[in-house]
Image (tube, rainbow, N blue to C red):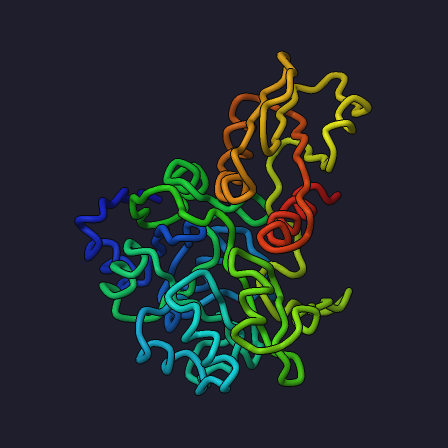
Length: 323
């Protein structure tokens, strides 16, 4: 398949591909998305094929207006509306009852849909040009790190999609926070840059009430809760203290090291030292990509405390390191 690389000045060309039933990769503030019209089941089926995505893994639908929200979802509950008003446009996805007109392939047959109103100017321009809600998971082959740069998106999807919209590096670099409702109570299905503390302040509830433990079996009710995710080609091992590095068995590996703070003295390793955890999260996937490209076979990544943004980073690192 020939893939058009489309500049932001020609966003209408990208929207035209969506209207014709094609797939378009587009930048958001979180990661690059792989989009199709949410109301074209044939186009949405192509998303699963392009990614190698399991068919029971629902898609997130991206909107840019209240009209598009009403087209894909039932009226929001008071709690969902409060979160939408606080964090949209932005990196929050809400799992809410679907509009019955939304094709079942988008929601994997579930009665709910994950919806997000992104804040990225490039994403908003694209969605507004499309004039329709766009179903869009991350633009990676399933299981691999999500693309957060144009080069990553092109590497993953060139020849698999009709168009790739050129954009800047993603501002957040981690997928959106996903909030759903279990027996009417809000729960965090996937942590992101909008933290549990942020959500609790709006909802007026204890942070601990937002914890969600997915069942070990059964189909996923949210993207990012069941299948393997975020894995680079290199093996990933985690550590908390730099003192642990001395005991790591790295024989036979080209080693990449991800740390926060001053770079330790390992002249034979590819060391990436981040200024803080926000930079770590923003550049995590692109660093995985870069270390894979230079031939690292083992990545040692520092694990943050599981609170605030650290909860989202730890979530992605634990999945990347899982067997």
